[in-house]
Length: 133
Image (cartoon, rainbow, N blue to C red; front, side, top):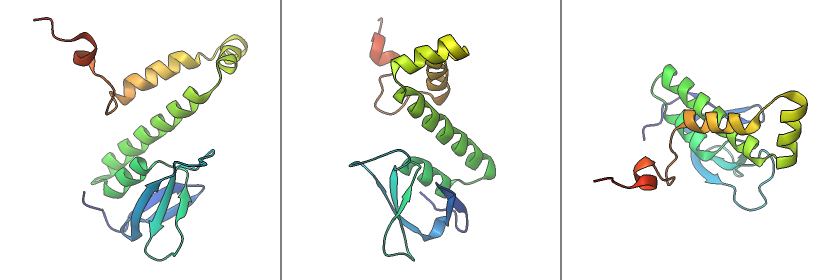
């Protein structure tokens, strides 16, 4: 992966950092609350910055080769974040949104999953149905 220098990388919480100063990304696994996704280690600080974005989203932004790829990466990250948040809603809240506001969360989850494409580790069509030959 080649880091594109001097690119501002959005870390969340209104924080941006230069891509060539980021030296490490560590996902937060324990006591992860809302918006706490990644510790970002930078060359000029002794303590990591807590970012509200995933390490994959930050890494993609650091290495994006063109502005178009950068924008596509941001859109993918936004879709993934939205899908994660929608999936975390309780079934009761999903029913309330559907009945009271005509917002079908399950339909949006399906649509966003289809747009995001198959995730690594998730079985593809071939794995689900096997070969027919």
